[in-house]
Image 1 (cartoon, rainbow, N blue to C red):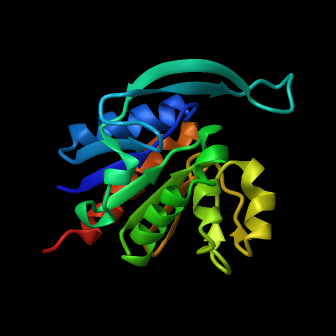
Image 2 (cartoon, rainbow, N blue to C red):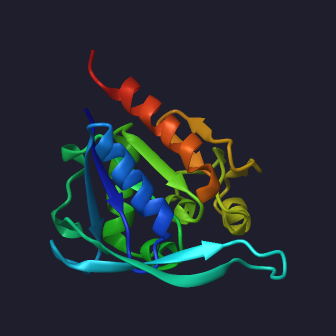
Length: 192
């Protein structure tokens, strides 16, 4: 089974962190979390976003505390088969961290699975690697995708975009489809 690292930070979307963490573990994968500025055993606080027709933006509440397994400066892409970039407002800060960008670049350049959902795309776009490539995520990422030279694809919740080693989902209601395609990508990366 694969070894997976999930990059998170304060106000990472709760579902997009907890669901893949537990589901992929249940399937037998080794799953760890990492966050800049945290050491092994410290916690981040997640956020919970929801849709409401009365508002132009999603609503937000403080979510659960989630333990970080590995300090970011101790994570080596060579030790893992995939990196997961969940969404949430944490991505606004994480995308500016030089260690975050170099880690994501190392996964992408090694042709390892890089999975994003929702605003996790912001981190991937900040690497400069998505020029001329199709991307998807939360609709707030569309302008950034254009500025990064990527090609925005508007997809429904239950659709994903798979391009080489990149697996992209839109938002948490489509976690099942995104996780299905992450699992498929991990199987294709496994040695026979």
